[in-house]
Image: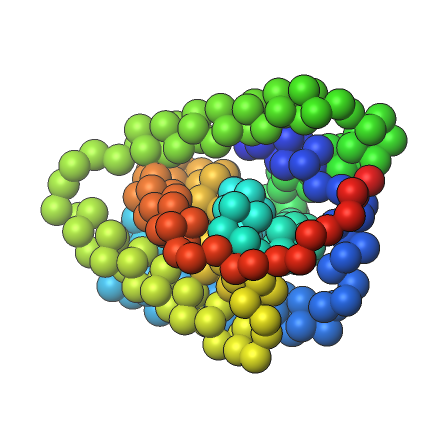
Length: 266
């Protein structure tokens, strides 16, 4: 329920104007989406080999099929990036996750407790439909600023609840040392991939696309891990969530790129 609320509130924050703006970079967006959909699962598989077999390894593996972190849209805007591009990549990566997470995990040799079809159904109900409902609500009802602020606050609350829920699965023991190293390796690799995929772009666009490549959604990953492998597999995603949010906070502290003033969006 918390994950559904998070994606619904995120959808309300996305305007049709933002989606239209993203058309100017459609080619690069497509390249980034295709490359990350192939490369990040392979990178997560390699990182998961740093841990022993079992649910903790499965949890690390799932990071590779997660979509872009929903918080990356707000972080990109705060840091001076083109949030419209980040939002477009978020939507695209979410659709890829919904459709392909189950088959990709199966192709990587993960033994799930539920099949790809059941996982697809859960992702549609908990991720895709709430996101679509939020975007549709924003486009049709034209909510006031106070209502948008309330939705944003609700999204932050849902994010904190999800982080608490996932972190509660962690038990302090030596097995989490290699798990943390594996997650750091995945985060560093995904950040390097984002840097490579955005070479040559102006700073605002580069930041907007590199951030969501580096920051994958820990909450969706935790939901997939719990559904496919059981609650114990979600524990590493609590660590990953803390690392990702810390990385986002550090990105905000960087000098902000100057962007030209934009007109009002609908």
